[in-house]
Length: 86
Image 1 (cartoon, helix red, strand yellow):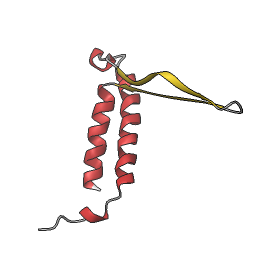
Image 2 (cartoon, helix red, strand yellow):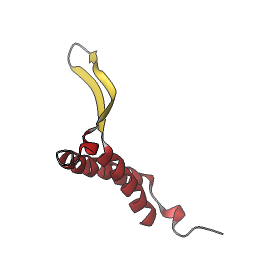
Image 3 (cartoon, rainbow, N blue to C red):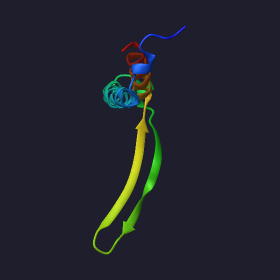
Image 4 (spheres, rainbow, N blue to C red):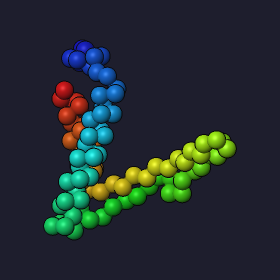
């Protein structure tokens, strides 16, 4: 039995839904953190100290930090559900 529409999904659409869920959920989580202390907890992970590359002509600095809260997690779940229904 073949699932309807399964082969037509683009993986970049999933990335878009996940990023939108992370961003919107993070903003909503920040707003709700002033009313509910449960949304106040934030987990940070990533490259805390930036990595630098000096090429004498140009200097490039790489760094990436994710700040996740409960709103972000809920946004990711909603993004996955939205992707599955689209």
